[in-house]
Image (tube, rainbow, N blue to C red; front, side):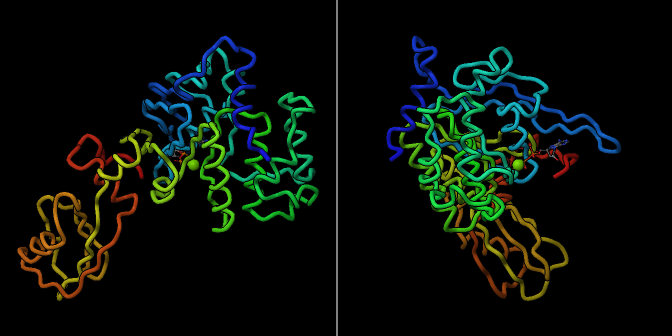
Length: 340
Ligand SMILES: Nc1ncnc2c1ncn2[C@@H]1O[C@H](COP(=O)(O)OP(=O)(O)O)[C@@H](O)[C@H]1O
Ligand SMILES: [Mg+2]
């Protein structure tokens, strides 16, 4: 039913300046910095330290990073709810400093926090939003959007009766009422159950296939790798990697071997070429790169330290391991004075 929707969205957003070709890049960010001012006893916080990023038109782009990395700060600057400290941002070819309204009209943003207006039913909420954006009545498609997001039968429900996942999908519908060519989702799976998450992703994939550029943030590597064609990794306000997903995954070929020694060693063994971290009760995790070494080599290195192995287990890397692997050997990225 909404099959014609995203191409129309791209077209209608650009109708005003039809002479202009579609931009190659949906979003261009250069040298973006943000320092939150000191408040009370809280020190000033540098949340973005000079971010360069390009999101190509049509991409499903993942901004991946742990909590506190600066993802929401970046999204909120794009959305116009946080002021940047420095740097430049162009959205759909328009500079947010010189053409803020045009730039923002190209975006639909679903913020990290679930906000639901309890005074409106879902259908009313969409109509109000459409009015806010000046979408003419005959171009509105509120019911269609609700159906597409699996909320068709909730059109006239009390919003407070909706589950967290439904509220989030209602937020997605609201973000799309003005047919923006770019949809931004900040941690969209927080508080969403598995089934609803699956539906949400199916819908996001569909509109992406139909031409809408998607930028999403997540702190789950798995989620980013399943959905995104390109992934940027952000840590401590910096982009530490930005690559097509398959390229990145090849670089992130790390695994852990968790070793439980017969008797706990007095101190953590140092194994050349491997990251070693304690796991409690004398056990420790050794991170190795599958392309470079093998479990056999890890175990050999452990035994060479005089440790008798009682048990081993292998694990896939979590995000922390990924960052270690990404920044391995790059001392400049390991500033111990940084808070985590
Ligand atoms: N309004 C704010 N005032 C002060 N510091 C903030 C504010 N918002 C975020 N921060 C800080 O900026 C850093 C980045 O936060 P955020 O952008 O929310 O990261 P993420 O979304 O990746 O978890 C964190 O250290 C956070 O505490
Ligand atoms: Mg966030």
